[in-house]
Length: 217
Image (tube, rainbow, N blue to C red; front, top):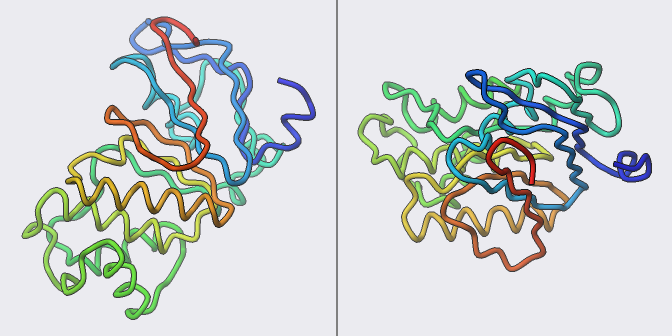
């Protein structure tokens, strides 16, 4: 990766290597993501897609290589990076005994953010959960619980979204909503990295990175 590309990137990674259970998933992997860009991570099951996302968001240590935020190593810019990045894994992080609004507030607390009830109601309206503010999460369907995370994304204030299988449990309307949210986030200057087995019909330019068996393709 050239110095010019690294300087222009919002997020970049250089020469990453990842090993799991004594098996090399990928090596010499480099990528860059500028403001307003969308990057899809592709690859077969077990190729390291989730591991790569966890490395990028600091939840896993790579065996080699470095992740940079605005040109600075993430290890030196953690506070700034975590203030502008949000990660949502493919498993829901919703607490069953909390209401929809309480779950959103708990998620916002992890980012030291607050939202007025009117803001939460507007976000829930946008994701199709209007009127479910006081419903306990355990009473919602898996798709509705997933939409709580979409409302949180809208309220997160994050510049970079890192999403692992964001279409999980969503119906056709939910998939269309997720696609629209990504498009709107991009149009507002936000950036997105995501994995999905389903593919997205985004009416915008989108780059892809393919992970191959035992290495980087």
